[in-house]
Image (cartoon, rainbow, N blue to C red; front, side):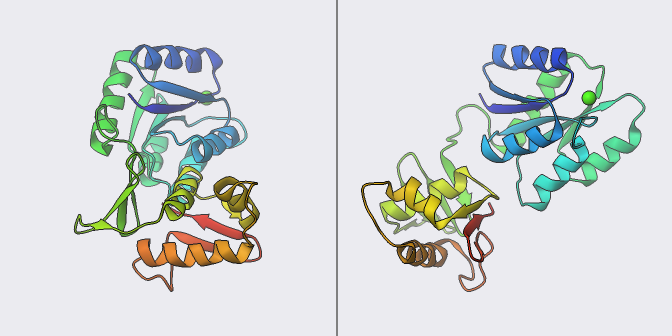
Length: 228
Ligand code: CA
């Protein structure tokens, strides 16, 4: 079972796909234009995106390109129309994992979905609470971390809470206030300096070169942005 985002402007097609995926045991989120699709891809943590090419507001190709530029590696299956060979080639160049040409049989799409999920390791039975981030892998279910040599590493609960919030909000600018609200809550009053100190510690634990971070980036004057 996986969380699948279906971005398709033909409502009947979107609903048909939703029904079929749900019948197969998946959880489905839908979006009907490119902008909404991109937003949901960034905020709803889907494990797979079914992405139509011809969409209002922002094309499927642009959505795919923007996701990959932001370092988001969620697998994408593009829906192209017959005869749009160029879209297939472009889609794969822009980072789509597979494509299927309309009209297609649902059975064929389900088989492709299964194959992509198997390839990307999101298939049934796999612990989806384990996230690879920078130099470590984090098991959010058991709140444990391991380094690249598979040795357990030290991480405080608060550090894990911050990291979890980042992982749930990839590629979004997150202000210090937001982190204080969501991770510390309203009942305590740490300063934004506290947040910065925690970020320094986190970077030492997950970044290869903490002085030049690739995962927890500083957004000057605002806060931070997490890139998976
Ligand atoms: Ca369309």
